[in-house]
Length: 191
Image 1: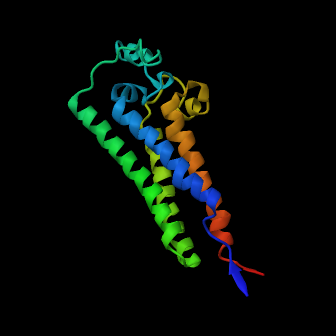
Image 2: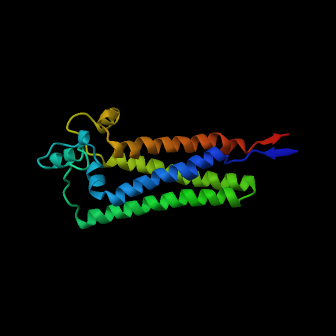
């Protein structure tokens, strides 16, 4: 009698269905509740071409929040950040609720595996789109290249780290699931 391995073991569910959504909620909170700080941290100072006043505004964001005085955001920028926060919430709810529903209500393991493969493909494409657009949006430095600055993480800030490194690590975890439990469940185990 052949027994199929579960395609979404509990540790993978905890990571993708709980840990990742909580981290996305943190990003949503930052984009919604601390819009000025979020906006001025999008481009780390190491990537900024020195311009009068602009560099001073960005350097101020490196100070503790209590002492940093950030300029007010215009309405379109604040609206864009609110919409970004809303997208973060959508991603968080999608991962938390859909993965719970998949694991709870899809009893056919092959069907569960197929749904998860497509779900993680969509998130993987979103990961690479996010990384690519973050890289594309960084300004060209005065000397060197974007890549040379990206290869020096000491010039990064928390937002750039999250947008590139954490997103890449999430993609690697999705790929590890696909190469591990995602493909292992295809083969029937004999008991």
